[in-house]
Image: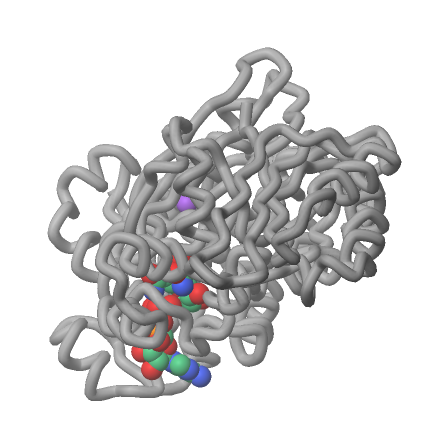
Length: 436
Ligand SMILES: NC(=O)C1=CN([C@@H]2O[C@H](COP(=O)(O)OP(=O)(O)OC[C@H]3O[C@@H](n4cnc5c(N)ncnc54)[C@H](O)[C@@H]3O)[C@@H](O)[C@H]2O)C=CC1
Ligand SMILES: N[C@@H](CC=O)C(=O)O
Ligand code: NA
């Protein structure tokens, strides 16, 4: 059977893993795909690296556009990253009638609407399993496995670097900067690690999941994004005492009036399976009206786990290469003309519950003042701890967990509580999700 020819753009962490796994499992993969999948050209601006990884028998170049223009290439695999040259290369590959496989979530979250429209017009596939949660087949699950459902919400630990940092800080008490360096050395972090720690990478991924779960366009620019840099280790400890874990979650929920799309540190009950996902592991919970809650778990970063998803896409594209475009699974799960223009809700309209930590004067009546403001705002309290003031101290910490409310309600109540003379400084507020 004639092999399918692949041009690999970028042979770094994921590109290197893809090359290695494809070679190692060649026989198994061919049995699945129906024909051999061969990387026949590699472009990397670091030619020495390309030579070292790919060896002999493959065309090597530092000009990625030469691969994209090569008439012998059937599928272009983009593993360079970023929104710059990667966008030009992907659009050029599509224009040249080539299928594209990419792990580039940044590119798809920001320019996906344009890229998928171009691919649709040209009748080529753009496959992106590796772009979300690395090796976990979450795109396949959302796009195909759950297609009977009205998906109601999804929430995931979708950034390995930050989950690794939170786990190491909690378990070993290591400082943030040290753990970040380790995550970089292990190949988990983005080229610019602020994308990881500020929640941007997770927002890219939840934007993509939201689009294919709900049949809406990519709306990254409307996502609410908070990372883990402002997180205080005292809150990690208080959350534990209350039976919760803090995880950086990407959350998207379908509501009749719009879509919630947000990334922030989140308290989740410690007894949930997802609360126990540690290190660079990822996990996503998807809730469908028919199936209920489903959980997907696995390695979300690293060379071979991500290569696993890239190659699964190569197998899919190879199988469907000769199929009529109408018989292929739609890029974004819904038929293109069925994509709905449902907008992302502002963060003030989000429905959630809260963890509040405040420093107060250690005087009688303080608690009554605070609970009155919350009650007047229609916010009920689920749990509370008041720390004993240390010997001789005149102030103490109160930690409260609230029931569900609307964010603007919580904001108004927090402003009123902060204005009380007995409350010192700003209130620390974290969102909580029950994930049931
Ligand atoms: N590392 C990981 O665990 C994961 C990475 N991804 C995504 O996969 C993509 C690749 O990531 P990594 O392999 O980690 O990056 P990397 O930095 O290890 O590899 C990128 C490669 O592209 C080459 N390159 C850069 N500019 C180029 C250009 N103009 N022409 C040709 N080659 C060029 C670099 O020399 C490098 O070898 C990114 O989009 C990333 O977000 C997705 C999931 C997991
Ligand atoms: N930097 C990302 C890599 C995979 O997408 C992460 O840490 O999850
Ligand atoms: Na995946």
